[in-house]
Image 1: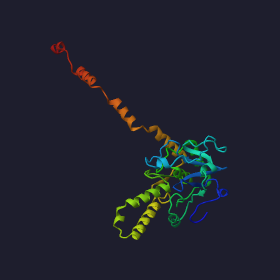
Image 2: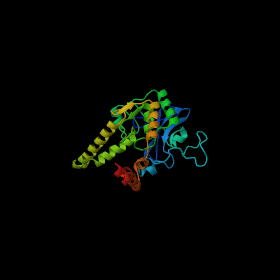
Image 3: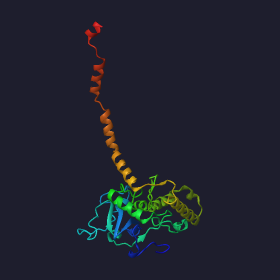
Image 4: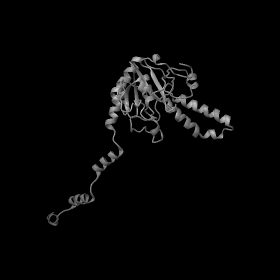
Length: 282
C-alpha cells in the first residue's frame, strides 16, 4: 500500500478491515467489512430500489454484487437482486475490480493529500472483534434504508469500524458523499465569483474544497456519538413502527374528524328541537 494508493493484495487483507473496490470506471467505490474466511459484509441497493437522489445516480449506482446471470455463485449463492446488508465472497464483492483498504487514524496532512474522498479518515478504528461483531449483527438485523447521500455502503463500513453515528443526517459519514457536497459548494459559492484570475480562482476553490472535506470527516465532526449496535437496531425498529406515510396520516385524521353535512345538521336539530306541547307545559 503506497502513499497515494490504498491498493493491497488479497493475502494482505485481515478480518475487521474496511475494504473497498472502485466501480463504473472509478466513478464511485463500493465499501464493506472483511469478516474473515473469504467473506465480506456490505450494504447494497437491491434491484429496483431507489438510491434516494431522484437523479441520474439512481441509474448509475446499481446492485454492487457481481452478476452471475442464471448461474449462482458457487461460494456465496445468488445475491445479485438482494438489497440491504448481505454477505458475499470476496470475488463477488470486488466484481472484477482491485482490492483497497480504507485507512483510519491518518493525519490531517495525509487526509488532505488524498483529494478523492472515501479512502481514509482521521477517525480511529475500534478493535477488529468489535468491528466484526457490528458487521455480523447488522447482517442479521439490517442497517435501514439505502440512501446514496445519507446511508450508503461507506456509512455502513465506517459505523462498523467506529460505532459513531452522526446527529445531522443531511449528509452521513461517507467521505464520497462529503466530497460531492464539497465540490458542489465550491461551484455554487458566490465569493469565488469576485476572485480575479483563473489561477487565484483555482487555488481558492481547491482550498474551500479541502476545508469542507476536512470538517465533514467523521474524525473531525462535533455532531457524532458512540452508539452500541444493539441500540442502533432497536432505535431503527422503533422508528419503523412509528413511521406512517403522510397520506396515510391524512386519511386517518380525516376519518376521525369527518362528519357528513347532513349528519351534522340532524345532530344540531336533535339537540335544539323541543316539541310545541313540551314548551306549553313548561
